[in-house]
Image 1 (cartoon, rainbow, N blue to C red):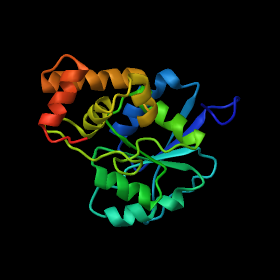
Image 2 (cartoon, rainbow, N blue to C red; image 1 turned 90 degrees about the vertical axis):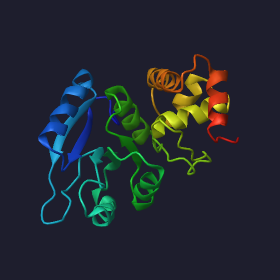
Image 3 (cartoon, rainbow, N blue to C red; image 1 turned 135 degrees about the vertical axis):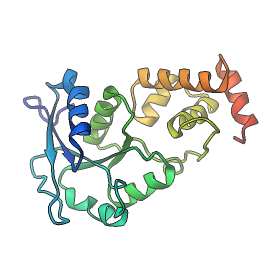
Length: 205
């Protein structure tokens, strides 16, 4: 994962509360040999110097000045920018990526998924592409989160768990968790039933 075999990835966390920062530190503790965490603070509307950092986590959708925050994303270079937010919606993903973010991840993602997203960024990939950006179809199923909806669409296209993991830049274990959640929320027990449920709820592919 690290760009060099002799040091961990240097991960900045921009303008987050102590609660979030400490939560991240705890979540990444099992990966301490691979990732080091550094809190960052903006001052007077200017982003801090990110020289020496590999990846910066930030949430441009926190607060009211969203457009201004999005406009600051390019200034976080040379570090890669991973938007890390509670707002899981295709439109916001597009806005962030179009503004200069390198990837997008929702804050309820487990630590393993965060590490996988950082891996993807450092490989030059763009984790968690929004539906529609890479040929995926937007579809919000009733009662499912955006990620669960994405997984259900990919199940409907016949992809295996491994293929879904590679498409969404998450671990296979994360995909299995999403599949279980889809089954539980839709009341099905098999993939064929899940696909039938998807068609009953407006998916036309």
